[in-house]
Image (cartoon, rainbow, N blue to C red; front, side, top):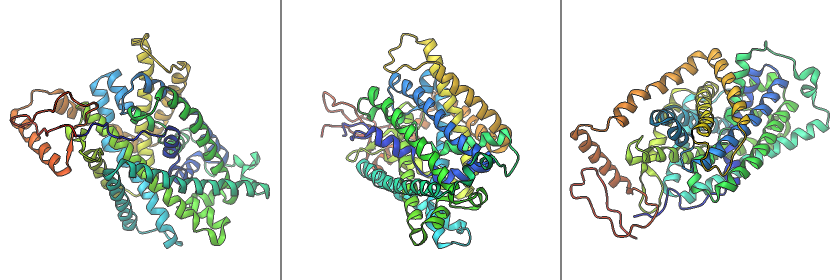
Length: 490
């Protein structure tokens, strides 16, 4: 019925890379980074170091992306290198923790910036934040279900909002420096602490900063949809990540030219407070620009997560319904609906954005490290494997050393938050053995799941995608017990 992969439209690599890294994080993470770093100087160092580590991780992922050219990102790499259980746990934690939490944080940030001008002297009501976040998630899910082209257009249009906000912040920061407002950037004052330094808190500061850089591995989730990934994937890394690091560092420099650390920590919407201090009557530009940015951030996260779940279902690690696409629009509607369900639950459970960031950051870094370790294992197991991109093993070793520091001290500082993520991940072990490893299930189970799949197929008008035209029309299975539908030539 549909002779395309998930997206019939090729992806502009550089544009997609930059627009998915630069998101809501830079408008929410500065407060968390500064609070845990304990001084302006250490916070700036954290932003620079996180950018360098992100670039190293992206180089490692680039090698894996062209060596194992599958969509699905680190899920596909971990599964192929360490086996089905490891890959399933990566998928399981992504389904239950990483993407729901990430999308909830961005949607709540969107709500916060939209409602902040309406409640200038107090915090917006929690119910209002949650309701607006849910509306944002549902609307963008519909857009992604309706058309891949619409989803990419939303990403392009709303990228302009984030670039406008960041350009204003950086330009005004340079103007402030030229006027002599750089008190907190002078070495004598930059390292003045407002609380004692703590290595565990500094690790949490890196987790907060890493949230802003989230999206650096986006292109690995859609490798099959890239044009010439051998050339364009490293090109995107070498251009986009240094640009993003420059933007993030100087945005934070700009913040402290207009606000003291205490004012920044007291603000619930840092960019809005910055705009109110410097833009005067035009301060309304900042919340609108940030709202546009976060709206596009939710869209990009939905696009990526649905492709991961699609890849997992195609490998048999999730219900096969999630590997189906609409017969005309070629969008993964079941995967998108599956993606957004836990998002609303997460957004309704907690509105503490910084706790959620620590929560998702720890689990994300756990699997980033496992994936990079897989690169070293693959070099040992398959030394003669064709690698269009091959980086020095020094880089994955450096990444893993930083990874070990981050995880150990984050777990020490936030044992409940990080431990909860680990516990949720381990619940995937029995699920894997019952749902995936156990192949000879009772016939009644297969019949029941087949009927549910068939019903959902009819409701969503979805079928399995084919990557090439079959030689003859496929015939309908006689008993339809598995719920398959007809796939014919257009």
